[in-house]
Image 1 (cartoon, rainbow, N blue to C red):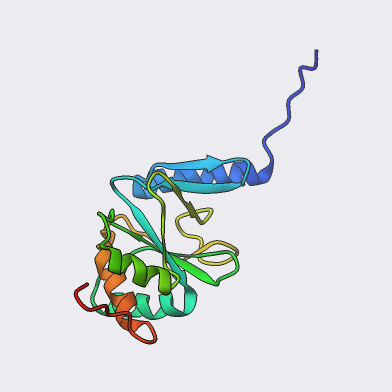
Image 2 (cartoon, helix red, strand yellow):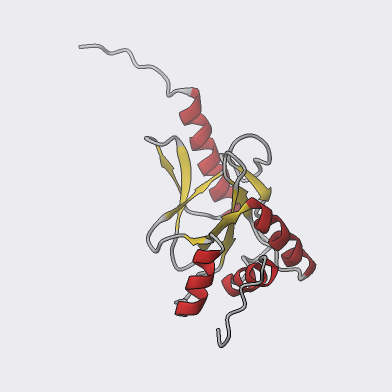
Length: 162
């Protein structure tokens, strides 16, 4: 029987430290997915996620900032998509859902997960915060993000009666 043990690899220690920082600084329930080597936050009754192309997302973030509604925004490792963390999204009307599909905006699935950067302060590297979270700033309403994205799309996705 081998009684020797080796310490966890550096990447695993970094993820564990990141998870602890999310809990300590923000009170977020974050899990480590060892197989994928990432931190995740479950989509639940406190948070939702809207992912969109970075070009549109950059304009949406600017507009949300002007309205003082900007919340946490995550860039994908390749930078082509950004995810806005929002308050939970109730149901969508079919026309709005169709507009989101047309704009390549994807909602985090109920019961799914949002992949987070390796720490609440990671603003460089692969997956990173474009707009880092803070304990004192509330998540924006999802319809504020959706409405601005629809208004700023080219051409604007303003469905009649939606």
